[in-house]
Image 1 (tube, rainbow over the protein chains, first blue to last red):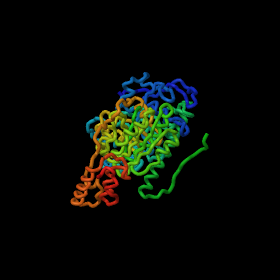
Image 2 (cartoon, rainbow over the protein chains, first blue to last red):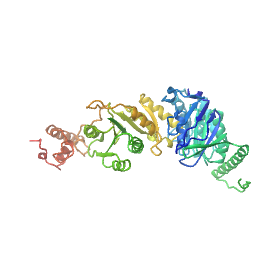
Image 3 (cartoon, rainbow over the protein chains, first blue to last red):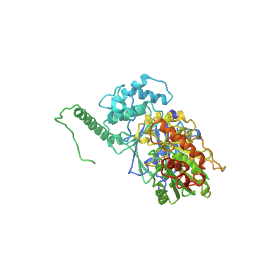
Length: 264
Length: 261
């Protein structure tokens, strides 16, 4: 079933001009983070669609997506319960008037699982590892801050969702520790696809897929230097998170210390 | 010929998705688009202009739009025998609406932010396809909970996540349309009975009082037995019920109906 998808392979297709894509295959394994970059309208949604549908040359792009190295069976492709990709986007909000604990137990129920207090506590604990203000089981979803909501969504998607692929659509300035958030998803063995141009998120990825004109034009492996740059920006981000907490607590900020050099 | 019925509450995203569907189908199929609404719409003109297909709008006015839709379907089919696919968009007003026919494909556009799906009647439970819209506004978890709740009330439907702004999901709806069956009979059958109301308020009473409602009901019932119930329009009103109301409100005379001696 879905949990057993350990590898996704993208076999090349064509771009919007009908030209063949310049790669043979791209392999994405469990626990990897892949950044997807490119201008607006470049074709990122088409790639995500292809992956969700496990296409076999029958989509606009003519790509083929293999699951665990093989073409997906008809049964897997058209299974109504199957949802390969779980997504998180900047536009998402919690709309249910319910406590965090009751909400997580509802989600477990919707997935056909029994009430599991241990798992619920774990989800909340992991969410609290990436957000400044701690979430309590009794807190109402509608009262969570933007950062807390995002943190809870990430932890929930990592621990409760069955989808093996997580798609993150830009979570800049979300008030969370982005590197730790990626770590949580990777530790749960998910394949993480992240559409972003943010240095922290893009450089925490193992590779970047560059899309232009409806086709994949390049795949770049993240260099060690780039990783270092990402770490630095994450440190700055966390530093900024701490300042946010001071502001939230009504304190004054007297001094900050940062170092920058020109970009190469 | 296929009849595709899109039903959903106002603002759920019906028209947005229908536009994407029409855009894709128009090059290979002869289409006809009919839009039902209560009082006003310009969507028929918009679609005709942008996609260059024939369209019509049908306004229910004083009548329940779902009843009106069923009354108009025979005429729509008769006048469009040359078309491959008729796309019908309902007004979708009440949770008890029941617009689908057995011989057509019923698609419910359901807004994921609308709350508990178990509140909905046949518009959801009798749909062949449930297209869940606006998923980008809520968390993944709430979407999964919503999906599970929809499947609890409609086990057989195909669930498709759609986005009226980006057109996501339109491809899957088109797939379902292509797989659906052609109409083989002349007379169509509703999947479920329509919601009903037969009381003094139906005959135009406005005074919220038991006695007044009953009086109006009895007067209306009497007139109802005299009119032909053909909605022929010769009295100057769109339907016999409208005529009865007007007579009881003293805005029309009985003799306006040529069938009343």
